[in-house]
Image 1 (spheres, rainbow over the protein chains, first blue to last red):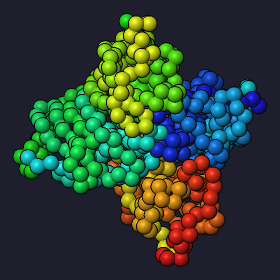
Image 2: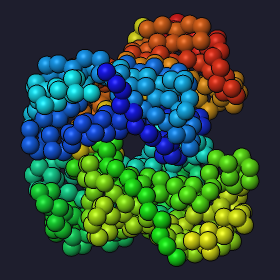
Image 3: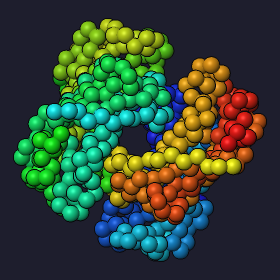
Image 4: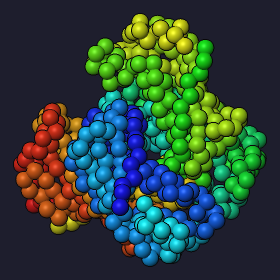
Length: 135
Length: 135
Length: 135
Length: 135
């Protein structure tokens, strides 16, 4: 199964006084990549909410910070499906500098599907489950 | 009319790679002080929304940045009413370091009252207008 | 003089519980556009700092909030020079939705040039002043 | 060993359009609690950097999101040492609503001690290791 990749530029807003990207902000980058991954497969999250009454929420994350990113770096953030079934999916996301092979930060992210109206777990819609096989 | 003052500590999340507080984050500090100023006068914004169907939104801001704040600084953020009538109020907010007199950053902030259901301007509720005279 | 324009997508990180973009986060979008405007003219801010010992800081801003942006909106952020001389420049920045004409938010931003080593105002380097005439 | 606890108020800046605290922002709350935990034991991180040439960085995190926090919630964030030796410490941090027992979010956070000048791992200073036994 191929990976999805999304480019992110590091601006001042992303950094901290240590001179590097603030640790919580890598989670922003990962979510941008997940959003664009769904969009690239035809799923707009505002439409999923208004039309299917579902939204995706982070249930748990494991984040490893290996090397820092800095102001002005051009980063690549990937999305790879580890599992996708029932009400949840497990994704693996790597962040690297463009044209470099070292992983700066890796996240294993469990996403759950919730009904938008009451935040209760619900099955991932069938058309989204097909992402597994259509890539 | 006396000023309201609220303490804010600068954490890494607030700073940027320049070693100082990121310019947009002073707006967070000002909003925290406005929230606590309303709370100190008995107004919880979640109750204003659920009970009176109103919320407050920033309509315009003028911000002057004089001196930077840094990691670990303990800041004082003030709220002073310049005008309060109809559907809007103009507030002046200063940010200083604790026990120092220099103003680091000053905001003049116009706040409008909106109906929570459709974001249209509406009169500020009478009990809030009384903030003018009860201090 | 032509305007520079930069696209910004609204993600969850940018929004607040009011359902719209958090007011301070429009300042992030404006800074991203300024960074890309300088980059498009050949100026990388990390190189300006390491090679010329200068950085740019916001000295003051006037922000008008007209209409809200929401999750998933695709925005266009412009940069237009109002004045550029000595140690400072005044920029006007509009934020609109892609393919729409209404301005959601407008900023008038005064940027000052500082020596990176001690944060004191200094003349804008000559090659940057030429941005005025090369567009 | 007793836990340290720090209060955090949820402001609009912390929330997203889902109406709840944005998932990355719980990491801010946890870092504020770690900063105040060190301060309460006599360690100011800016002094650790300038006097001992050390800083603390997040090496990895495991975050479980159980229940959402919302605008205006008053939260309690705890810090508990799981291990503290050599160049790293493992902390467990719970986030609850004030006066409620349900854990909203739990983080297991590995912190490493780095030399501030070159970001290389180094032993945690002896006086900080004593936190283990002085509580």
